[in-house]
Image (cartoon, rainbow, N blue to C red; front, side, top):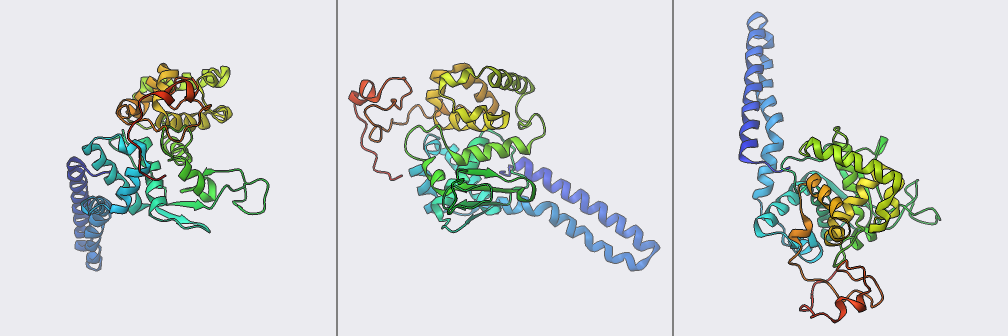
Length: 333
């Protein structure tokens, strides 16, 4: 998604070689049939076609990052807050490129800067550990005012229970998200449910042909993951570690649900199932529990009898409620 100096050099060489080959071929054709001299114009056209995306992306990251997007990331995206300065800069650049290339459209609702930034964050979080990544064929994200049914209707239907959808068939290249669900996925504190991350995890799986995993994932890790999924779908032992039941629908939902868990509540997953956490860490090339370890726990939203956000398995009132309190969080969700 981001253009490194090495990628830029490779792209430029490729464009020059292709345009030179077109010019030579056009010259030879014109030698034998002079009217074909117009084919020489294809050389600069080919150069531009190869270079334009690379040049555009470099221009995008040089622009000042919109402060309203930066505020949304800082206030609402826990993953972003946990990054160091250099990582935050890279995250912002990826957000800028994503929103430059993918439309975010509200359907009977407004897709404002908050929504656009959260959609982009949902897309970047699962692939942040990969050096070379593109959401190929993704053109638009539709944001609905609420849950919808199989006919994409949100009103006057008892079957409106879909919170997100990755388009297939005539909707290929489109992601649909419920606006309230997108916002709730970025509520303060650990959160095992994030519809945005869930749907973009499906895109990660769909985009790559090698067992549904990106090529940067080592083959040994791919084999371990495939074996783990097969065993889990058969025995469903993960239910004991708090994995959402929906994960056991099929291997695709298992991947998406575990992605939500891994990035939304990494400390909890690592404490409950360190083997699974280690496998996901190798798969995504990220260690979200480690980078989030310095963030203060958000305690003011927890109920006394709810499970403690620290992942201990105890009730909040019997665990962190009486621990020293961090300075109050003045951000808004």
